[in-house]
Amino acid sequence: MEKRLKSWGNNRAGQLGDGTWTDFRTTATTVLGLTSAEVVKIAAGGGDPRSGHGLALLTDRTVQSWGANGSGQLGDGSVFSHNAPGQVVNLSDATDIAAGGVHSLALLADQTVVAWGRNDYGQLGNGTTTDSSVPVRVEGLNKVIAIAAGLHHSLALREDGTVWAWGYNINGQLGDGTSTSRNVPAPVTGLAGVTRIAAGARHNLALAGSASSTVVKAWGYNATGQLGDNTTINRFTPVDTLGGWSGGVSLIAAGAFHSLAVSDGDHKLSAWGQNTSGQIGDGTTDFRVTPVPVPALTGVQLVVAGREHTAVLLGDSTVRSWGNNGSGQLGNGTTTDSSTPVTSLTALTGVDKLAAALGGDFTLAN
Image (cartoon, rainbow, N blue to C red; front, side):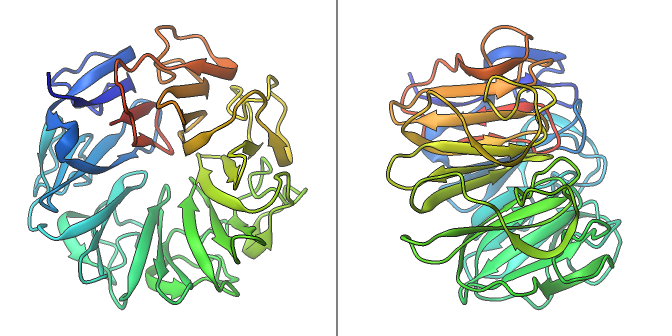
């Protein structure tokens, strides 16, 4: 039997893509029509617990989308939600995808970026604040190698190691020293040598430096300590996250209001920020303003974060999740929150891709 893309958690907007509007799923269901073999990358977006949308980049460089679509975030030329995948129009050469609160991004083969969906703060980067239900080109960006999408803002990493940001900026999430929103990209102040980027609801992370001396940079909203600089002060330009891992860092991820990093070598996970539902994974619900280790987890290969939950892929291809589980987004057959990792029942072997909606309550695995 062919392997299929899986999903679990909230489904009020059809974001599980299984052809139903069933409220939620506590174990994995199958996204219709997409075999694991044809899916290259997955992304999950969502701006609130009951909403969300999914994206899948296929081997032919087209993109499929499903779920909520009130602002055109599915990119199919309409504003009608659908509970099964459909094709993003006018897009045939994508190499990467990202999903924000109510908007979506795609990196193209020519290293430029297109965007679609809600644009009230300029998060589509096309010089307007008009929503678009079809992809539009982000202005003035080239040589892009990675993209990320926050709740109402967007990020791009360029070949030269600089990071560019656009969209909502009231909390400093554009990192340009101001609180002025922008509808075209501008460089994040003082960042160089960046190799990875991650976007939370209103904050961002960047990995900079060499493998032996990696630093995690953070900026934007910090009310729950998600920047990891031992304060709860918003930062309008990047600051250093204060350690908590041994050696370099290989992976970073951001949920709505919490952050995560995986250390190089031992593949151990650290987390910081909001912990209302146990999404830090340290067995408490105490907020953390500096990184703390997530105990009893080794061999972390991937980490993703949702509104108030976290999921990781381990070296044995199993998925562990923790945090809020009110919609079954931990995928363990219950709706009970957990402040320590539980096993997600995916019925998938050989998982190598994970996605969670930064402002939503669902998870994708392939």
